[in-house]
Image (cartoon, rainbow, N blue to C red):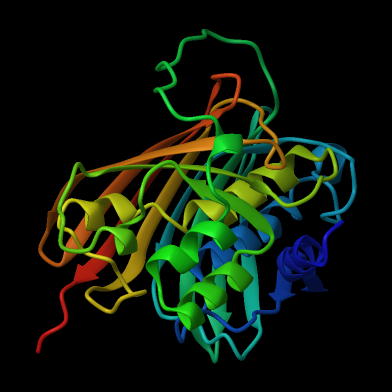
Length: 300
């Protein structure tokens, strides 16, 4: 396993300090706060660790033992997280039903809640089937890697920081990213292929956790594209995630190519909305994602 992916799995793994209380570490971020995808992924791990033992997901992220996985999560980012301090996750066992298990998680730093998540887990069952078709997208193998693409559009130091921060994930833009088309508004839509840079264990929860982590990386790009803005990387927008929701429809592997098809239906009041669908390379709709974030133009 590449060192970058090994380090990410260590980051997302949690220490149990009480029955329903866990502690997670953090690391230096690209901006002076904890990356939102990290907090969401760690909170989901904490929730999964409290599912009853007879149907529990793995107790370690490197295990291959399976169990019920989340079918949805809903989260609010309450305060910026401190990347230099650990995060405590307190889990509330809302309900343990025959088919569904519900958990609420509060992430705490310096005595204050910084993040709140509700997640619902379901045991597998058969049901009605239909889905929206997968949109056209280029073959991911034909697209440049982040290490190849970023230096074309960003200063060398910024590009290097982005490459290092995302080294555990192979993320490939299907078109020019926002910071590569500053000043040229275009359709509020962005497509990104992603997979982990290395194979993962077979535990379905692990793949859901990794997709949750990646889902916060690019979802508001489509907001920026509509206005020809480049975002924090070029300093023409100040942004932060406000809330985040995901629905997990079908099994998938985060170590195989996934298409993140994103669009923005609205921006107003200093906020922008992004909505997206994640498809497997074979065309299965795996996940739906919606996020609203702060999108402010800095004052001179």
